[in-house]
Length: 328
Image 1 (cartoon, helix red, strand yellow):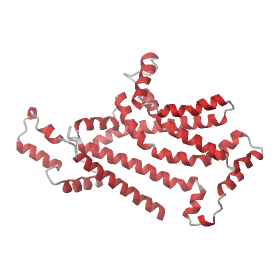
Image 2 (cartoon, rainbow, N blue to C red):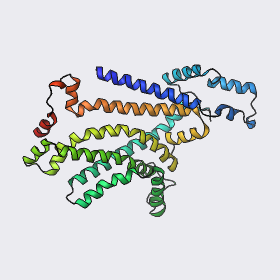
Image 3 (cartoon, rainbow, N blue to C red):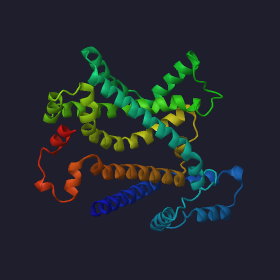
Image 4 (cartoon, rainbow, N blue to C red):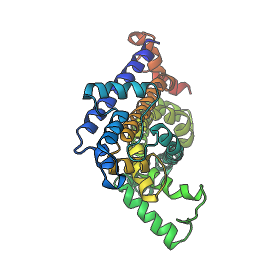
């Protein structure tokens, strides 16, 4: 319980730092988005009306008061109003988030399937050339720019092969190419870490013991090696969430999807600081919660960490995983 509370406290500090850094950076942007929008002669607003609008947005007070006003609003779930269209930011996020969450979750699951398939097929194959080919694919995937891959997929599958329509696609069809665009680069580091972990675990003494007992290579890989090699992969999966969010921004822009990424692109273009502040803080919250979940999952996946948390690490034998693997 003490470990969990400490990690929650660290997560709260990270969120506060992310909020403060975002507030300072957005305030340092050149220009005043409110003045640019409301001083437009076409709107015909008087100086008193513009001053009243600035007061309603809370930007006519010193920065420390703006910071406290914004922070207290965030803590209460009030993200303010969009400068661009006056809509509550909470409403804009609620309308855009389901699209991005669906895209991100589906892409992450596909990335895991691709990574696991590459890692296990390369470990099981008896052909050296195929093993080298499969292990070289993640290096190619990670070097592919997301926006370029999206354009190529549209060109090949929509315009050349006509398998996935660009216009008039149903929700499932509209998800296929964006998911592929986002999943391929994310799968690369997962596959690289998993392949390296499998190679290291296969050299452990307990694997030799299991093989000496007559277990097949496939059984050893699935039953003994995989569960010991998965911990580093879980770690990198949590870190990859940041890339997933960044990739979603580009992917939704390329495919014209309405989501958090498209909302971010529009907010940056209009210097809509309330929307940008909310998106950055929510992205940081998602990143922090994912890494917190990964940290709390470690003891479940690795019995050695459970013993460490109980304070018995000093007396635990260094070959604990060997005995567990051999017994399995």
